[in-house]
Amino acid sequence: MTHRIDWITRAETGADIPAVRDIVLAAFDTPLEADLVDALRTDSSWIEGLSIVATDTDGKPVGHALLTRCHIGDVPALCLAPVSVLPEYQRTGAGSAAVRAALEAAKGMGERFVTVLGHPAYYPRFGFTRASAHGIGLTIDVPDEAMMALALDAGHPLPAGTVRYAAPFGI
Picture 1 (tube, rainbow, N blue to C red):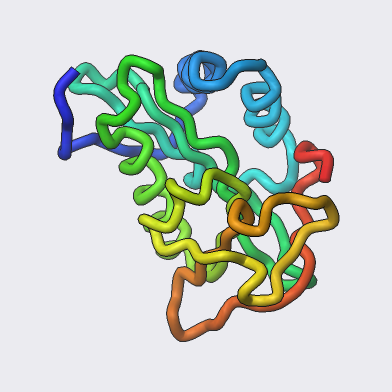
Picture 2: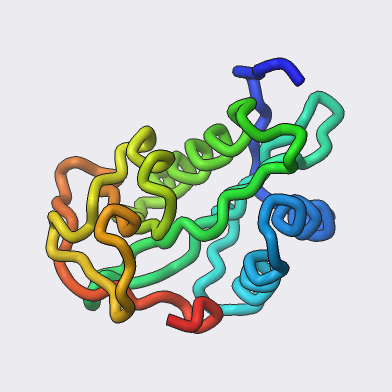
């Protein structure tokens, strides 16, 4: 597999649901993340246009990123849920392209804040910083460097508070 810079990204469609499930199942050790994505589709936290796929040259989805509604205290925000890429396309930029497209779509919709609970070496490239530095926390204990937050508009500083996720997250 060669490195690609020109990934095509687009909003997930109903026809993509089986492919997205296959991507998430292939990317993670257990079906928990795929079940989460499926559950989020039926939850009020789902926002049309913020589930993004990266496709290969034939239009086949190979990467996926999802933003859903959460709150930082009482302030509406988004949560970056599982980012997943088919194993044979990992480290080709497909996941990064999907994340960037999701963040741009959110910004275009007027969204201001995004949180992510994830690998601390991956998300700073998109502008995420440690959430605790902004007074943002969780109700569960996680490594401080794993919980990150991003203001999509520099004119609006991140709010402080406890993150409340959608019910399917179970947090």
